[in-house]
Length: 69
Image (cartoon, rainbow, N blue to C red; front, side, top):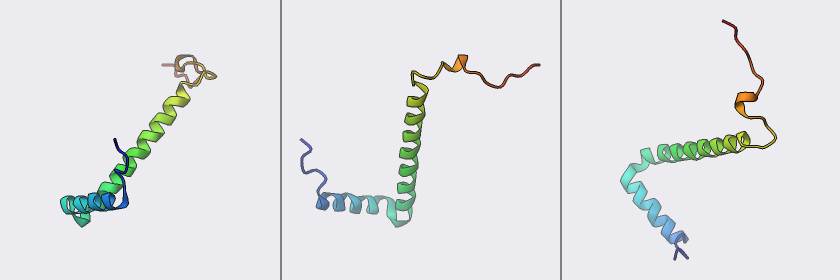
């Protein structure tokens, strides 16, 4: 169904449309925002998978700082 969808000519047309819609000044900001979002998503997924590791005790049983009031 999606065979041949991302050919170089198609990508150039998509980039041209994005350039017309967002303009040359907003396009780098948009790319940076998307990159930051993807990076944040990856780090959240990584921290979630590390939290679910079977060799670590649950968060409630982990030793940590204690405060006495």
